[in-house]
Structures are given as C-alpha cells and as structure tokens.
Image 1 (spheres, helix red, strand yellow):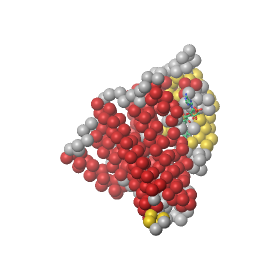
Image 2 (tube, protein in one colour):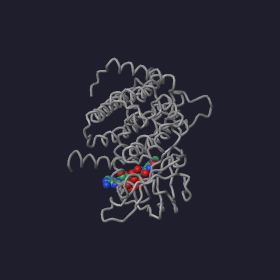
Image 3 (cartoon, helix red, strand yellow):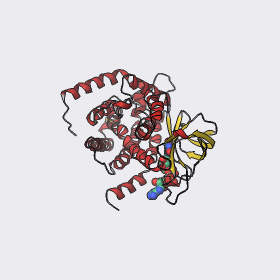
Image 4 (cartoon, protein in one colour):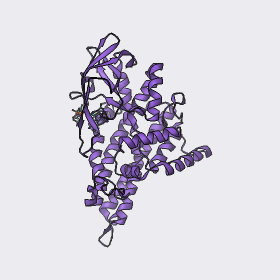
Length: 392
Ligand SMILES: Cc1cc2nc3c(=O)[nH]c(=O)nc-3n(C[C@H](O)[C@H](O)[C@H](O)COP(=O)(O)OP(=O)(O)OC[C@H]3O[C@@H](n4cnc5c(N)ncnc54)[C@H](O)[C@@H]3O)c2cc1C
C-alpha cells in the first residue's frame, strides 16, 4: 500500500474534509469521544446523509451501489471520518450481511435487500448467539424445519443487539443434525414482523437498551429467504465473524482523537498549581495510550494493505479486535479518572448539549466493557492468534 498521497487522493481528502465539517453534528461528537455508539435514530440519519452523497456503502463494489473505492481511498475516508468524530456506520447490515448477500445471494435477494441497507431504510440484526451457544457457536440449537415452501423456526437467540429496532434478522439455524456440529447449519433472512417473534430487552451496564433476547415460536419464513445453500451456513457465518473483527477498524481509528480530547480536557483542569495534564501520572498514561492508538492505526493500515494486495490477512483481524477493544477500555477509564465526579453525567438534562470536553465518560467506560466480549471475546481472539499465527 502506497502511503504517499497522489494529487487526486489529496483532492479527495479535501472533499471529504469539507463534507464532514458540515455534516457531523455536535451531539455525534460528544458520543464518539466518550466511546459510545450514537442512538439508532442518529445512526439511521447518518446513514441516509452518507447515502445521499453516494457514500452509503464505502466498502462495496460499484455494481451493488457501493463506492468502489480503492483501499487507499477507503483509508482516507476512515481517517477523515475519525478526524471529524463522525459516527461509525452501523455494521450489521452494511458490513456483515450485505457482502454475504452480494456474494452468495440470489438476484432477487440482492435487488430486495441491498439498496435498502445503503439507504438506511432497513436495519439488520445478527441472530447467532443463544443461551447455550456463544463462544461455542456450533452448539446452536434453534431449528428450522422445512414445511412446503416455508421453514418453520423454533428456538431462542440471545444478546441480539438492536433486535427491537431491526426490520430484519440474519439468523443461523440448524436445518439438519449431522455428525460434525458445524454441518447442517443454515443462514436464513427473517423479517422481524413475522408472527411468532417475541423480543425481550436486556439492559447493559451503561443503563441502555442495546441488546435483547429473541424468542422464535413457529416462525414461518419463505424458503426463498435461505441465503446460499442449505447446510452451508457455518461457512458464511465464519466469513461474517472475520469481517466483524475487522470492522473494528473504524472504532480503532477514533482512539487517537479520543486521547486528544482527554488531553485537551486535562489541560483545562487546574491541579497543584499547574493542570492535570502536567501530572506525571496522567501525562504518562496519555502518552502510552497515544502510542497504542498509533500502533493500532498501523495495524489497520496493514490489514488494508493485505486487502489491496488480495492476500489472506491470517489472524490480523483478531489481533486488531483484541488491541482496539482493550485499548478503548483503557481510554474510557482514563476519561473517567480525569473528569472525576463530572464523568458521572449520564444524559443531557440541561437540553443544551453536553460540553465536548465533558462527554458521557462513565457511560462510555461501562459500555466499552462489552467490546472485549461481543464479536468473539478476548480469550477467543487469543486462541485464534495462537492457532493461526503460532501454530499452537
Ligand atoms: C452487549 C452485547 C451485544 C452482543 N450482540 C450480539 C449480537 O448482536 N448478535 C449475536 O449473535 N451475539 C451478540 N453478542 C453475543 C456475543 O457474541 C457473545 O456474548 C460472545 O460470543 C461470548 O459468548 P457467551 O456470552 O455465551 O459467553 P461464553 O462463551 O459462555 O464465555 C464465557 C467466558 O468463557 C470464556 N471462554 C469461552 N470459551 C473459551 C475457550 N475455548 N477458551 C478460553 N476461554 C473461553 C469467554 O472468553 C468468556 O470469558 C453480544 C454480546 C454482548 C455482551
């Protein structure tokens, strides 16, 4: 990957910079700096704003409505988005199921689903985990039984993020019992308005409703909603999980501006005749986190360079997931320490907006705990690295 920007790349960067300067609203910035995810309504609005500009699907090929950008252009887009504290596009439709639909889906599925993912009209949730199947996903037991032109689905999904706002769910189900547990699993696209679906909220530590339990009781789904081949869902599912680990690149690239924001705040807080930023304890932590953020940016570049060269990136997506999630936790913890009692502001009660140098820090720190669990826990990432990189 050539990091010297060509005159065209520089012009593209300036175009993006101008766009983001006008499009990123202050409330997005507060949430991003705190390490929080903006609300579903804000994410839908942001998706529509990008789609209007023709940038709704930055990683997709042109023929499916994407930008067709090169890895270098994509890197410029992501770094400029991070620089402007733009929201991270919600990934479950765009980065997880969308690419599987355009790779393995039927023409009808592509026509029906892809444009509405780009416009933000449809919201997809991921129905993988179950009460007895998380890290050990192959243990999943939700069953889909063929009945004429339909599958009838029964079972329970767990931790289904945003199922309560989603219009569709991509769901891993067992369509036959085989000797190898990974066989006989299929990927089915489910309309969330189908009778028999019940959603129960699960509140996370940050006192927000992000995630849910989803109960499927005789849910009838047309056979045409099967994605790819019956019984081959495990293969598609694994591709999705690898993408999910790499999707963190956008979050990873925001770490540096979060560290910068903490530094600016610490410089304004008086302490012992100087400022908090001058104390060795805070200065050392900030320097260390900035180094980590820069290292992680280099990891993102390497992943993108692999993509540009068309080579397998091995366990790099797992390495990146491990590092960004654990660093985000440290960054949000430092925010909380620096702000002290002010970190406990949980919502904008004044109606005037939370000041940019005082984001919802404690809420961000609590929310960040999930990042080392979802998309495969840190222990699972370490296992993957040990196996794929060290051959253990
Ligand atoms: C907020 C949140 C949102 C989520 N959103 C979604 C979603 O939208 N869709 C979805 O399908 N899932 C989602 N998940 C589920 C997530 O993917 C699982 O929680 C995760 O895979 C861990 O599975 P588990 O919770 O069953 O824990 P378990 O697998 O039971 O693990 C428990 C502990 O044991 C450790 N462990 C397990 N196996 C091993 C091993 N082989 N070696 C070493 N340690 C091990 C784990 O690291 C963990 O610490 C979400 C989870 C959370 C918390």
